[in-house]
Amino acid sequence: MNCEHWRDLILTDHLDGEIAPADREALNAHVAVCPACRELMEQAPAALIEPFARLERVAPPPAVWEKIAVEMGIDPSVGREDPAPPPPSLEPTEPGPSGCGPWLLAGAVAAGFILVAAVAFWLMIWAWPAPPVVPPPTVTLPGVATPSQVSPARPVVEPVPVDGSASAGISSSAELFDAERTSK
Image (cartoon, rainbow, N blue to C red; front, side):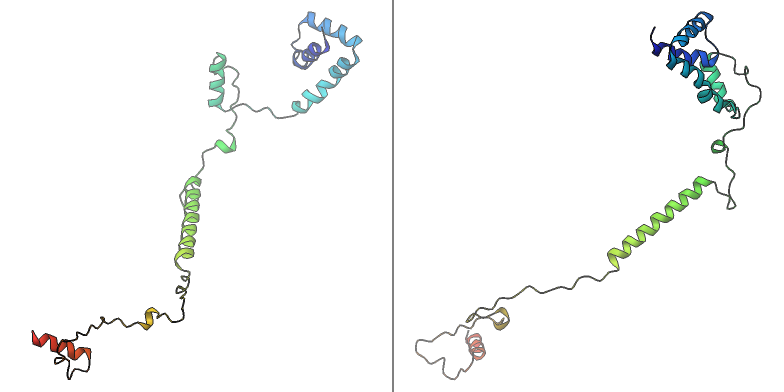
């Protein structure tokens, strides 16, 4: 067998104390001739077991242990000496001084931020003055009348009588218009 097999055996069954007697004899024979595996066998307990031996043993909460026991196919009451308190994150929270829980408070804070953002956006859009309206540029050509120089009145057409008698005494187009209207 190669060293990889022996390293796996050292890190699993040997450290757990569950190595079979035949495997223990073969492992001892291998580490007698292999310095790398012998060093791993000597240093593994100090690096992998001892740091965790000083930690406090914590039992899972009852609901978690029941699910584990069902998955393992054992009675949930087996191995359950003293139930551990639930982790702080799973403890039910008491209402705060205002009578509301933490989720309601977080929702109120979020709604407040949204309201402030909406008011700021509204003020940004509607409270600023509109940009000034600039009239379009005008082009003036020499000898061409601009729209402001042309009068909006109707064009005057002066009829010329054949005999010349009707136009005597009329000095303006308004008088001509009045004369035509009365003659009809």
